[in-house]
Image 1 (cartoon, rainbow, N blue to C red):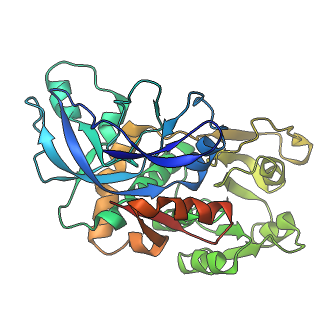
Image 2 (cartoon, rainbow, N blue to C red):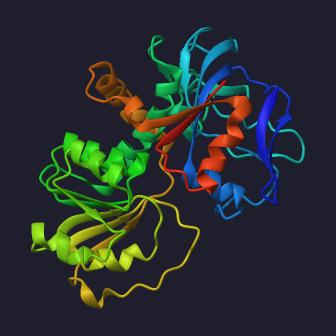
Length: 342
């Protein structure tokens, strides 16, 4: 099969790989789509993703596919099922899996069958879920982001009636804005440098949007709406310096939340400007168990028409044209979620 690999020098190419093997409680999945993650993928390409040091790496972690074969112990999946979040850990010698679903095949594990057999269930298996068979696989790739965002909101403690500032309005930031309004947070303030993204945040319910490409006092703008400060400030893209700006925006006992992964792994923090009591909460690697727990709610929002994944998708590329997606990122072409279709 073909898979998309990155080498230590940043060179990317589609290469021949073996079809992954699968065990008694696993199923083989033929991939139909996979989302491009500007944050994780690009940091792996530039060799700055914490914990991934051995190259070449097979990219892709936002996959959707259909089951084509099942192990004899599988009870939760059947051939033909549309499934979310296959992985490919069965790498040939010398290769590392960056979850590996920019490949023609992946695998899913049956968490329920493994638990029933008294086996230890790996965390990732809880997030490998069935989707309604009539869901569009391209649109469904966005569900990975939705589940990560919504489960992370719960970890951060977002709650109705609480105020929120979101820095960065890619697909992740917009999801935080829209879901914050779904659960009743108010006011929600969104910060970005692109007019179209700010307008979309307004459409999702943000009470105030701020263009930080201009000479503006972010703190003054936030406090014009929330004079006493806000309950939560979220870095959705990975700008470490924003922690210090956030500290000037918060009220007592507030929380500065970091979800975006920065290539810079250190930051000097000045808490002289903030209240005495506050929390800095990093949550950059969502729990797959927690993602699985919000799966049904996300799927129901989509089925009911409350949430439209295609609102978040700006580009769709054939697998053979996958380099075009990464060229967009390198060339700073404005995009939302990009999806590769097999």
